[in-house]
Image (cartoon, rainbow, N blue to C red; front, side, top):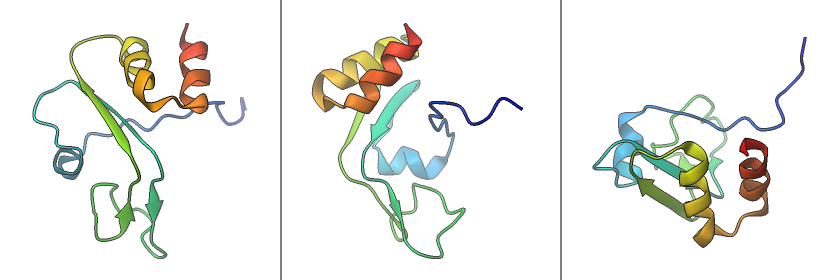
Length: 90
């Protein structure tokens, strides 16, 4: 086997996420920090605010490449982890 990927970004299509991240147009790219599930919340959607908390999040709408969206998001987020992901996409 190839082992675990270096980066495993979560790609989700979940109606509850539209509400949580105020998505009203698609496509949309969201980068969320501090995602924490309460004990016993395994398998529950990130959109369920009763059992999942989220720190800051950044959203961008538009039909651009994933890399371009992440670069634009990281202008505000200034995340070293996100920068590594962007570099791997170049």
